[in-house]
Image (cartoon, rainbow, N blue to C red):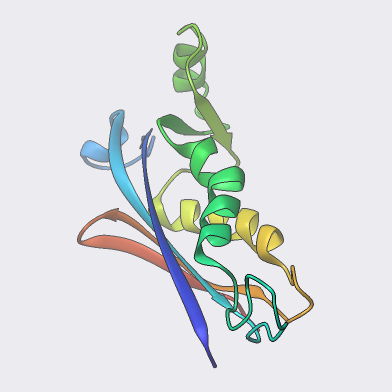
Length: 149
């Protein structure tokens, strides 16, 4: 199996409301996102993408459009975290992203995977698909999700 991987970074804040330690407080991270795609190599003479699974600039553009630009410099908040949602709503123009899960790195990885799998689904008729997503919360802590082919 041949895969390609593109790495992107973004900054975002979050909190884990019921956490036993410091993560229950408002804080942020420099997240690193690794997107791994699988698919047949494009064999189309004269095409800019000839010999590629997908052009890395296209991988980046789709990730930015659907996820990175949406989450970058935003506060990722659980829909049920009404205290923080109310607080953030009081800040004019604040960039808040409400998700349906507590924003642990595991849940953020699952949410990101769900968003991006639709963005990359077989764009060229070559079986292209999101194979794996890795989300680093810190250099030493991350979550990985792999498609269940």
